[in-house]
Length: 450
Image 1 (tube, helix red, strand yellow):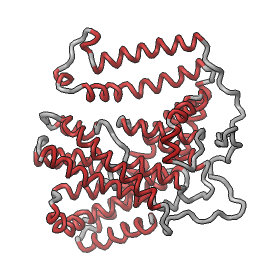
Image 2 (image 1 turned 90 degrees about the horizontal axis):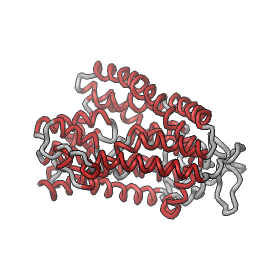
Image 3 (image 1 turned 180 degrees about the vertical axis):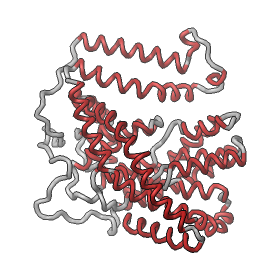
Image 4 (image 1 turned 30 degrees about the horizontal axis):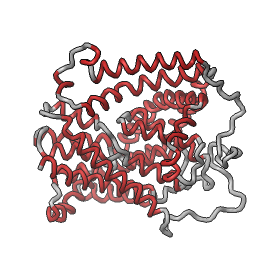
């Protein structure tokens, strides 16, 4: 499907650009987006990837990933029946989902790429997305987000009376989109057009590793000849208890300063307990992960520096691998936008949307959101500026922005990291989740603010 989408965007960009006398802008957009893909996305991502994959390797070597996977085994086995319960992919996916829920986008992408690489170790059809990969992409592109931080920041900068008013609507809309994404991906994988083909004789495993022997319960685990991490002794538990106490103190100081004898700011006083809790967790999550994982691993006698370096090497290699995939999709999207394709679609769909009561002012944002994060952010900012930060349209736009994802970017990055070219039903499932999220955002906001 991605072949036809990419070709359609490229050809449509040239034809529409010719009709609009915008071929010069289309040509410039191709080179600008190619440069943007490498210089603004791939290279900065290399550092972030190196950091988080280094931390993830430490967490894996210390046994934390396996502990996390066991804790969520019942839910994850329902969602990913083809993935063994003890496989590292389970923990990697859970880490990515947690980062998405807390709105930690700079951590979610590297963790998601790591999860996709782990899933590839189970893929018996290299180059073709497995059912588990498609399900993970559907969940990732529709993941519930507790705090739409970017949308709130735009509203706050525009002096909204209550920038956090969209938190509840965004949560409800993302719940709808997540349910729709999971339902769609599970139904589509059974259709003849998307069903996995039979395996060839003597199939080879995925690109990045071979399947390891199963453990006593039939679960596949990653092969590793290194010495297992030592169990925690009494001193280790004492250190972790003290560390947890410091974290609790920091959490109270940020979210509930009155409890520790501090004065809460005026902005903090306007927030309820749920918002205070989520904001405090979001602020503390990254420092906690960056310190707790190495500390725990050290207490289990893991050589954290050496393991971090090995993980960081993997992160850098992966960031280089995804460059061609970023360039190809971002160039096509940039050309289509500059040619006037989004405006043309908006004009064509306007009569139908007027008939069903969908605000046409939100249509460009809805069309651009699956294609471009920066483009949709710009459109959202324009809506806030034109209609005011407390308007129904601004709050609905913020809810849409916070409850949907740049589906094509995510698919290009995640599948590009493992060399998957046949995406099967991942794109339809992601777009269905986006569509449901957008429709749910409008309906919910009409009920809340209309």
